[in-house]
Length: 122
Image (cartoon, rainbow, N blue to C red; front, side):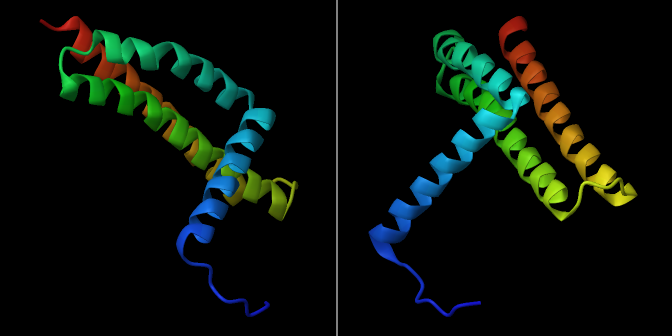
């Protein structure tokens, strides 16, 4: 590995933002589930701000939506690394992908529970 000086300050921040956008764009282009969740977020985020009765409720509604996107991105990262290592079937590769999928499912369940509790209870 080459020994390069570590970037600091605004240059490091700028490159981090660029790389983050690359990741978002890559996930959006390659993952149908991420595109579906982004579409859901486009609908739910404005609703969260409108329906939340106070700052805390709004924050819970918004964060439950964002959590789904975050977990999906992490799941995509896991799947990409597993596929990069090899496409042959392996028990541990399957487990890694299944665990990532389960995390997304729990984030979606969290979204439903938070929205249900905040919007359907008096």
